[in-house]
Length: 405
Image (cartoon, rainbow, N blue to C red; front, side, top):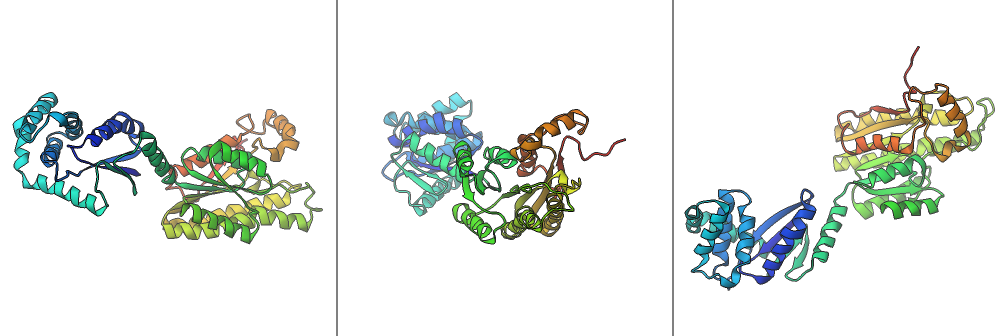
């Protein structure tokens, strides 16, 4: 949560301008996303500033929220207010607010309210406040003279930095791209690509995701990838193991080559398995995290011309179970999403065949899936909607997994 802490002196003209900015622009724009905290910092040279701050404390005791209105009221009248006329200002504002002015004025005699104002001053001094208004957006200070554009930019930067971090492998196209686009609405996204730098750059332009070239089968590339995330973001909240490849040539299981087997096992199984091992250790240290494996209906549906692909996905499904079991006690949830027939460039060569089979009754839901369908399932995980369901398999397949007579 981003916190905006403002130190104001109720006898300060610059604070009047900031108060208008605060209530007219900042609170309406960031309500619900930014926590606004007020601290009194009456300067000794301003004789009625501390009594006005004590009155603000008392107004908030009488009815929560009245202090903000009081500060605006008195700041707009600083030129005509003195120590002697301050009680009149209290009576005027109390009448507007519909509260008993005598009850508020009695607060001027209370030592505990004065002590709270003194505590605000001590806190401000400890943070380096010497002028008013001084505004802190989390730890960044804006002192006395600043514009709405400056403070808005500071808040936006802190909001962006406070967003959770998601790593999506194979994000430049297809299902991975759809997932990255969806997650960019709420997360800082790091997307990997292998060869299509052009597509990765368009993803970055579209979503502001960071893109990182990575051969997922390479130990060194996986290490460099996580080092990048640590260095740039300092944490990892969600890992989506999406990167994968089809075999370069469909061949019968009786004729498929060892070279094809080794390549697909390296990319589709070894890469995500060991990336998860390293990421899982990191998340366990953090005490939280979520991991998603994008597998396939090929994890259980045998296709004799795609044996190495099916075997890699079946083994990856077991990897999900292993990590879900191991990481549960560390508050790290692991999920498997099994897409069915999804419209991507991976199936472009056989897309028409699949359309014909779907029309012939292959799927209970008679349409081909889209990348956005898979992204919606990842969204449910990312939002914590399934946090008590670790190890769950989510079928995004139009009902293909169901058996029927």
